[in-house]
Length: 271
Image (cartoon, rainbow, N blue to C red):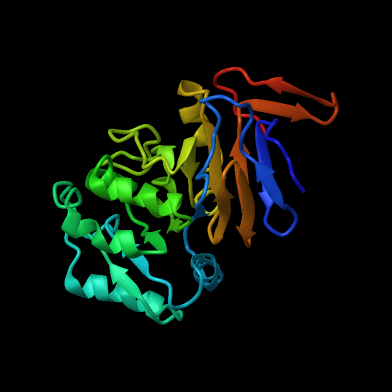
């Protein structure tokens, strides 16, 4: 089933919805994903079904993948932490795994650092604090190579912080607290443009938080993902995948009684 986004909040249950269009208009402000590649955007607590789907999307167990653990909350990413990230994927049948990490944007701006990305079929961004991904990779050579991977038909996946970083607006990007929706970091890596992405939606009772962003930035599309639930994005469409709900916020509301769609006023918190 194909649906265009014309209501304030669509609740999309993974088992009952098909493909949904995320382009409202043919304009530069339209939300849109990669033209050639695929995004796998997961709302946190990703279970085996997502690793299996990622493996399928990249082309099988022998495809070269890069794991980026930079968002992890540890102040230092030790060799042991890197090995644990790698083992998580090896245990799930991936045979060609590289863990790539830095918290120094000068390093991520070098040819030596980005070589594994240039050879990869897929990238997986870790959970943690999304601003760490932004600090390390935004507007660097690594960022350019992430986009090049998508251009050649590759896959970028991520869960929790690794989901939010894929949007153009960085929700919960404050270094002080993850409860601040519009913080000291507001720019994501922009693999899907004109979109803000939130995660752990119903598990943490976050379903109303997106309105704070949209009150100030009404041209954005909001996407909220519950845990172990995600979307597979290709171009201007996505498919819901997982066990719970995806919520889409577009600043309007559909009334069944009135059989009409109308614009919400600033500050509205309606379902």
